Amino acid sequence: MTNLLVIKEQIIKYYARFEIFITPVLKFIVMLVSLIAINANVGFMGRLKNPAIVIILALLSSFLPINVMIVLAALVIVAHMYALSMACAAVVGLVFLIMFVLYFRFTPKEAIAVLLTPICFVLKVPYLVPLAMGFVGGPLSCISVACGTIAYFIMHNVKASAEQMTGTEGVENALSGFRYVIDTIIKDQTMILMTIAFCVTIVLVYLIRRLRINYSWYIALGVGAVINILIILVGAVATDADVSALGVIFGTVFSAALVLVMQFFIHNLDYSRTEYVQFEDDEYYYYVKAIPKISMEAPQNKVRRINPQQPSGGRRNYDMDE
Image 1: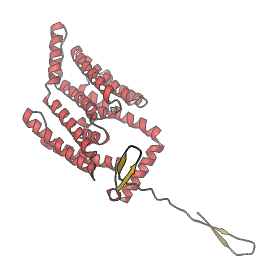
Image 2 (image 1 turned 180 degrees about the vertical axis):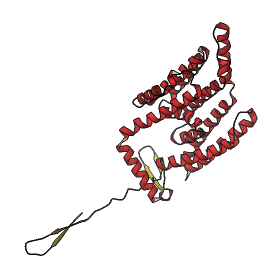
Image 3 (image 1 turned 90 degrees about the vertical axis):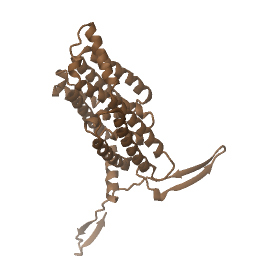
Image 4 (image 1 turned 45 degrees about the horizontal axis):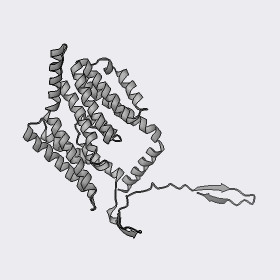
């Protein structure tokens, strides 16, 4: 455990020291993976699938604010939809516009959740995001996670129904295309189920980890993981949603383990040294429960040098310097 704490402090130290270089690299990686996932699901426009274009957009994103990265990813998706059909591009663009209004109004600082949610779906660990946002976010984090979830299922549904969405030229065909795309998005039971489960998990984890009890963070994670599994499995039976029971269970357990690692770096508390403090001012009397974080400084290596000196008298002296 001591070695892990030392490694943790070293990682935090080096990140703080080289943050100006590490942050652009992380942005580049996130955007690169996002663009690859977009092209793999809705790569209808050949030009945007060009590796050179993908790398250029990812490099550009490494120097942009993360909220601009979200807008850029949405524009890439709409461009792919336009290559499929104008009706599809119009509907998806309108849905994205509504989501952006909600996102920028309530949770503009949680752009990373919007980007990571579709990526985690592609990696088969989408349950990581709601469990993590319950720790570091709040109830309004439901908006950012829901936006990412809806964006993923839009791409997934369009990919599965690409043949039915083509050929929407003309007024009648265009209107038919509009209706088909809207029905595909609204009637997706799996998307609705996942969105509800993620929102409930976020709120539940947030409420429990704020309780004034020892190990509330671990209790919140365990309860959140169990509730997430139950909601999805029960909802899948009730709505015939396309959900793998084993995938939900193992994915949630693996996501909980990753959140434990995250919690070790963010809120690793030492409950054995809990202190209770009482003080007052002119208007209130305060009862404070203080729980220190576990930290461990890296040991400092001391080197002693023995320098031989040959004085004129023939005797050799030794000076020891640290």
